[in-house]
Length: 313
Image (tube, rainbow, N blue to C red; front, top):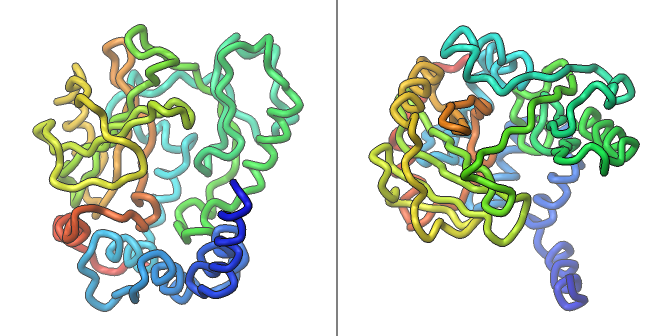
């Protein structure tokens, strides 16, 4: 970051109250602010317009409504990367779970000697902070890993965007098998398939390849017919060529319908490795309801697919 950019950001922070709120919100400065007031301010800081909660029309608006007025107790279990496992096994079969290597309440309790040469460690209640993807245990800095996991365990993932379902998850650390595919190596990255379901119906597929921030990260949004969706968002470059349809694609759609039944909106995430379909997670918001869809009118189009339920408080 150069000096000119720092100065420009500093001036904007001082002069632009919406920008200032967005920056401070991300740092947890407003954690005691009531949810509705907070989300209205945060929405305005992101989109430059008022949040319509009386008659929400866009997908982003409806996601904020769901945060505030649809609080099903079972969402906490489904958002918990550990507790959700028996639920998934019951619904679609244990063979679709990534093998579990261990679970702990405290990073200091982890016996790294008992873990294989490759594994993944992560917290069950958040997204990313504390995660360790170990590809060679001989090179692992164990103390650094413990320190990062402690940061992850201390994070209240519900604060920044008020996704309440993460707040009461009993915090744990889980170790899973490191999954890799002969056709998807470390250079190309494993492809993620994320099925966005509206009132139990898959409507678009988020296909992404993430190589931990490298230049070849890609993302495309596809229809259930495996064609380019009529909308996009610009977090990553789209694939030059859309990846081939997964071998288990029809099962993916079938399982997504099973797991999204009776839920207004949920994204069901999968991997396909070695011809086998693996469940990743259930996500009840897309970027916490702050996605800039293009072209104009796309947010309204996606919002039209979501019929809001009766309030559940």
